[in-house]
Length: 500
Image (cartoon, rainbow, N blue to C red; front, top):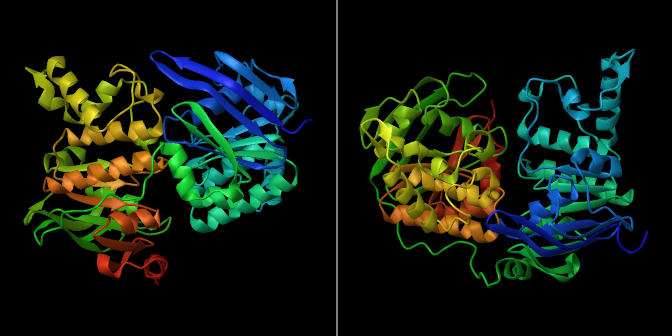
C-alpha cells in the first residue's frame, strides 16, 4: 500500500441538466479520519455514492489499495471489497428486529434455515465490542433514532470494512452519544481503518478529523490538515466568500399581541408530554430547547393535528379553536415543517412542482380540476425566492440535495400563507450557507407579521435566532428564558432538571 488507501482522481458525474461532479478529487490516508465538507449540493454524497457503487462515474479514476476499481457495479461488491457506508437518512426495516436489520442479506443459517441463536450471539458480541447497549431482539420501530444511528454504525463495522463512510452520523445524537461515537471512531482509527466523515458541524470536524477536503459546486477546492485550519477558513472555502456573522441581523421586535396560546396540553400517550402551557406573540420566534426524549416534536405534531390529545385547549388570536387533524391546522393558518424530511416531508418520486404546491392544491383548482397555469408560476416564484438549485420543476425532488429539499418544503408552506409556522429542526443536515438563507427567510416572515415556533438541538442556533426559549425535559416545560438572559449552562440545566 502506498501513501493513500483511497484515491479518487478527476471524478466526473453528470445527471440530466446537472454537472454534479466536475473533476473532483479525494485522497485518504490509511488509519485516519478524513472529513469531506461543502455546502449542500457541493457533490459530497454524490462522490461517496460513486465510491460505494450506487452511481457510476462518467470520467475519472478510483484506486483502492493501489488497485483500480473504476467500475463498482453495486453496493454488495463495495462491501465485499471492504467499503461500507452509513447514510444520512436512516431506512430501517421498522417491523423487524435490530439483529435482523444488522445482518440482513447475510443471515447465518443452519440446515438451510436462519439460525436465530447464532445471529443473536453475533449481534451481542458486535455490540459488546463497541459498548452499545441495545437489545438485539427489539423491533427497530421501538428504538430511538439516536440508537438506530449507532446500530447502523455497528452494522457498518460488522463488514470488517477498511473504509467506513459516515454521512452526517451525529444528526440524531445527543452530546453524550456524540462523545461515545468519537470513542468508537478513535478505536477504528487505532485499528488502522479509515473513516470518511461528512458533517456540517465545524466543531466536530476540527475535533475528530486528521485531514479535511473541501468541495464547492462539484469541484475540488483543497485538502488541509485539520490542525492547521479553523472554522472561518472552512466557511470561506466552502461558500467562496467571507461570512462574518452566522446569523442575519434582526431589525424587528415581537409585539405584545398573543397569536397562539396553548393551555394544559397533555398527550393521549401517557409517556409523552403533560400540562404544557405557553404563549406565542406576533412577530416572535419562540425556540423550544431540550434533549432527546423531551417530547418537543410530539408536542408540535399534536398542535398540528398529527397526534392525539388527551386534554388541553388552543386559542388563536384569543378565540378557542379545535384541531383534530392536519386539515384543521391548515384551516387555522398553522404550518409545520417536519424534522424528518425524507420520512414524512417530501414525496420522493414526485416532481419539485408537485412537492411545492401540494399543501395549497385547493387554491390551484378550477371546478375541481388542478390548473397548471396557476400551479407552475406559483412554484417557480417560490423556488426562485428561496434560491432552490434545480434543473427544472419537473425534476423528482429525491434528486435534490438535502438543503434544497428543505427549501422546497419551506416553499410549500409559504404558499399556504399560514401566519404561524412551526420549524422542527429547520437546518438539520444543512450547510452553513443554506442555513443563513433559511434564517433570512424566517426573519422575512416576521416582517410580514407572522410568528414562528422553532425546535432546534443546536444551541448556537437556538440562542442566535430565538426571542424566547421554552425548555422541556421528559415531556414537561421546565422554564422560559428571555433573550437578554440567554445562557447555555442555564438552558442545559433546565433541559435536564425535571424531577418526578
